Image 1 (cartoon, helix red, strand yellow):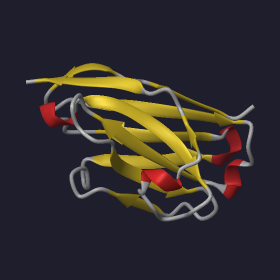
Image 2 (cartoon, one colour):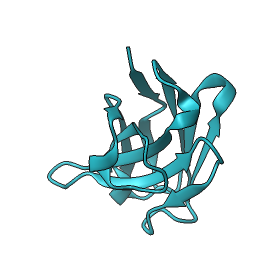
Image 3 (cartoon, helix red, strand yellow):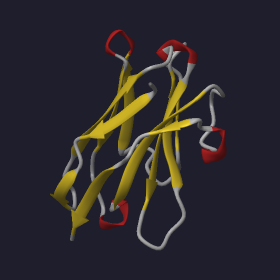
Image 4 (cartoon, helix red, strand yellow):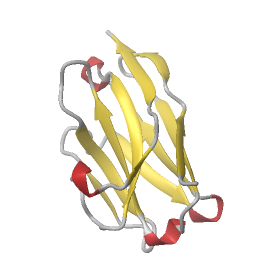
Length: 123
């Protein structure tokens, strides 16, 4: 059974940091790219960052570039998203997802999704 389980969300003040984790199981981790997406109330889902498991290459949305960092531990089938310098507009449910297509933040190309973890940034 394919599973993606996010953790690490919470409530933080503006300027603070959080580290999100995504635990993957049930598929060959090295064959997939893992992406982080977020969705705020009343807004469309937005791609945040991806990492290609095969070579570690990464990409970021402009809105988070320089503040968020994605990393992975292939031995543990884990992907992390370090969120720094958080802003109230970063408030959203954050999801991790898996795709066989590398280098993309197009949500329609992601096959498997987690349930999400809430990040709330207070001003």
